[in-house]
Image 1 (cartoon, helix red, strand yellow):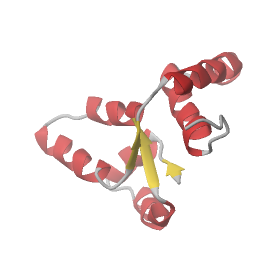
Image 2: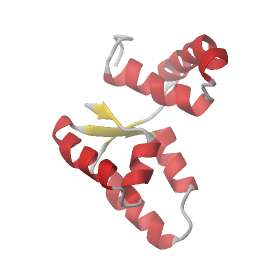
Image 3: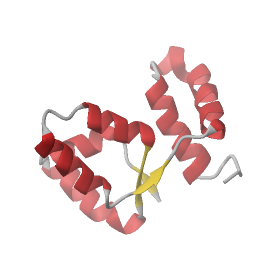
Image 4: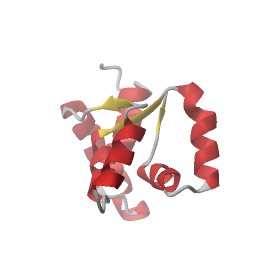
Length: 109
């Protein structure tokens, strides 16, 4: 499974060829998004047509909700990398979803 980042989805929606090719190729890997990514995409909508396009795109992906374990992992990531890499809370939650939920390094489901 591959957790997509908001940037690749925005590029895909804007018709950027590299993003289209990447997602088309990666579809075999079982693609996923989390609650933060969905929120970021919805926040960028300018009209109902864009919202409908995003909803159609998101229908094809697995969805991961945030939970306490993910929040704790995001806090650790944020504390570890905030100063050196300017990690935002959203970035930390996305990384924690990948690390804790998808990769299952946290060994909880």
